[in-house]
Length: 131
Image (cartoon, rainbow, N blue to C red):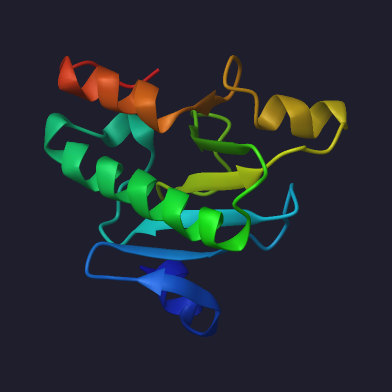
């Protein structure tokens, strides 16, 4: 995948399944992206078989951002289509507080545009599409 190949020098973590790097337009003191190496367009394309991948992304994302900042409250999530700006699944890991701009607040609001890893996993375990 082009996204993975372009991030060689910026990687905070990499294994056989994922890559973690800093977001190019951070919305918090720390803002990381966790990207699977397997090309998955967005959360609508996830299946039950992806549960171990999502659990791994969440665990490694938490670990990476906690290594940068143990104290701050964190936010984790996947943008719900059509609010995703990149057609490759990615999980945001951010430290709070987030910017107060209305647009940015809506972008990372779990009620409107962000599906938490927990909610995605719950849906997949019930053979439902993540919402």
